[in-house]
Structures are given as structure tokens and as C-alpha cells.
Image (cartoon, rainbow, N blue to C red; front, side, top):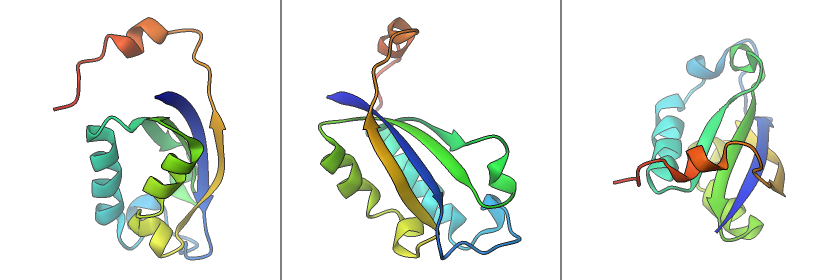
Length: 109
């Protein structure tokens, strides 16, 4: 497995004037992302710099076999299906500082 940094942002289906927690389907999106986290695919995820209050921008750190694997998994996100979120980049990420903390995490159950 390899680490990837993924950026996503509000897509054409995003309802302007509403924050992330006011968007339609927020609970389905959250359940989907939590499922990826429980599988050990998404290690870290969250909005950038308060963007959850408007047109969201998100950073994910994921552990996957390939960029294609990540793109395939994110395709099923309910917010992707409704175009609320679009993936803007998927890039291999080299973790230099703090790697020992990541490897010390308990395995997902």
C-alpha cells in the first residue's frame, strides 16, 4: 500500500450559501467516509481552513494500492454522485515526519 494526498472541493451540485453540515445528504456522505476510514483506506480527512462554512475544500490522506484504486473508491461517495464534491487531485505522498505515530495506530476493527 502507498500513501496519497487527495484534494476535493465543492462541485456544481453544492448548494451555495450553505455550509457542509447543511448540505443535503451530509449523513450519507459522513457514513461513506467513516466506512472508508474503518477499512483503513482514509487515514485522515477534513476541510481546509474553515471552508466547511461555505464552498468546501477538503484534504484526505489515504492508504491504497494506486491512484486508480482511490478514484474508484471515491466514485461511490453520495456527494460525488450528486456532484456536491469533485476530486481535484490525487498525488502520491511521502510521509517523512511522524511516520512512527502512524504505524503505532491500532488496527481498524
